[in-house]
Each structure stands twice: as C-alpha cells, then as structure tokens.
View 1: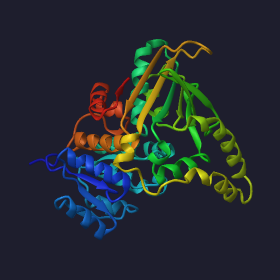
View 2 (view 1 turned 180 degrees about the horizontal axis):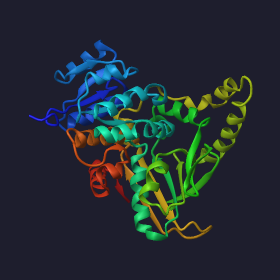
View 3 (view 1 turned 30 degrees about the vertical axis):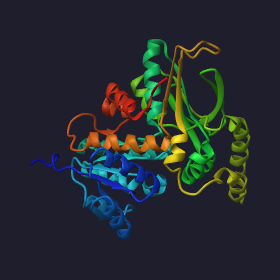
View 4 (view 1 turned 90 degrees about the vertical axis):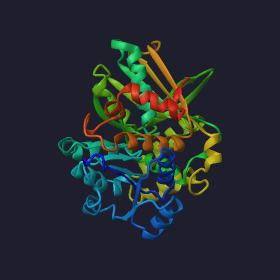
Length: 372
C-alpha cells in the first residue's frame, strides 16, 4: 500500500468553534480525521463523542511537534489563530513534510508571509497550501474569476463586495468581532496599477447594486488581490470591500481615520481600544445552528474597463449559507479532495489554481453557494 493510500486528515483546533464546524462537515462526508491539539483531556472527550476518533497531542508553536505526525500526502487542517501569532510553525511543518495544508485565516498579511516563506519549499515537497480557504476568501475569488472571464480581454478593474442577510450582529462570532475591530488599525493590501499597495482600512466606501437595493461597503483586505492578478494579467486594479453593516460603512471611515491617528501617538493604543470597544460587543462564542440558518452570505464581483462612470462589463452575484457554515463545508471539501493527492499544482496557491474553476464552482454549488 502506498503512502498516499495511507494518507490522513489531521484537524488542528477541533475543540474550537470553527474547528468544530469543520469536524462536523468532515464527519458528514464520511471522513475520520485525526484530532490534534494541546489539551489531551478535551481531545479525548471530543474523540469519544464521535466514535473514538484517533487523536494526538501536539504543540502548535513547535514545527517538530507536528512533523512527527505528518507524512507526505496527509492533509493538515488548522483553525488555530490568531494566525500571525500561532500560524507560522503549523504552515512550516506542512511545507517541510510535504503534507497539504488548509487554514481558516482571514489575515491577509499572514497569507502574504506564508507565500513568501513557504511557497518554494512546498513546491519542492509537493505540498498544496491553501491559506484562507473559507468564507474568507473563496467566494470572492470565485465571483471575481467568473466576472473577469465574462468581461473578457477588456477587463481592467474588479470590485468585490462581501455582504450578508439576516440579523447579522447576533450571527457573527466573538472572534470575528474582535478581528474586525483589530483590522481597523492594519493596512489593507489592494492591487493598484498592476502592483500591491497598502491602503488604510475603511478609507474607501463603494456602493454595490444588490437586486433592487444599493448597499455601501468599506475597503478591507482580501486574498483576491494576491491570487487573481496571476490569472488575469490585464487586471490593473482589484479592491475588496465589506458590506456586512452597510449603514456603518461611512461612519467607519471616520473611526478608522481616528484610530490610525491615535495609534501613532504615545499611549494612543489604549485610547484606540476604548474607541473601538463597542464593535466587539455581542454574544460570546459563535452562532449556533439556528442563528446560522437565519443569516446568509452574499458576494458581488463587478468587472469593468476602468473608465470613470463606465458601465460594468460583467457582474456576478453569489448567495450561499452562513459564513461559518460555508467555511466548515469548504475546508472539509478541500481536505477530502486533497488527501493522498500527489499530482497537480503545488505550493501556496489560490482555490482556482488548486482545483480548477469548473470543479470549484460545482463544489460550491453543492454547498449552496451559487449564482443568483
């Protein structure tokens, strides 16, 4: 029996909120992942509740601890963040072992660094590395790819907006609220004039048409700016926006400006934290199944020739399940698709390069993410 036939899925972070969603999605697909983490008692209890899954105790901050449990062709799935603080040893272990890698980060700076640090080694070992393979940012890459293809050779600009329906404030996790707050002090990479530049988060507001309604969204970071330019060299500009709370988009431009000014002053970080603290208020943990069912994701990609005031060349609108449900399903599908894989794209790649557009689009449709 080959090593590929013995390949396993290792799930790091299964005892957490997002990890639990990935585990549930894997089990629904018939997979039996190996649970990995630092809390032996919690792992054993979780493994027992699911029919005695294998589990291993590892230190995610030490690559060698993970390497002992990884073989070429395995898939390492991690939901352990913040990734800027805890993610690099995990990515390094996968690249060195030739194990495929999937994470749930929304931190674009981390994705850039993973590509810079581990892409070459992953190509050497045959590892496929898929950072940010969840609601952040697979739907936007899929919508952007479809819109750019429909626009054809004239496409120069992509504007991508993330929206949601339903009572969203109760439908997002404590971790997401904290990430959104912290993100106001971090620059957002954008693709401008065929190169990556950094702009102040929420410094721009863009209005999208969603059916008969128009909704505002503010500038954020997104891995679309990292992966789409190589597929569409004619694209000069790519910008990603968040429209979860459209009425807050313009006020957030002022808050962002104030926060970034404060953080440059002595003692300013404490004042900035106090100013943005209300953004973190809400229920602890993450939304349960009932709340997730009340909230749906909606992503728009608008392709244009770049002329001011010009009509769009193409628009793609995708609607699907809750951001959290979709993330769990996407990561589980990718893990199942990669386990034992020994051919195809390797290195730090985007979802289209990893699986092909038709395969990715079909898989997303099966999860309920489809054009509207």
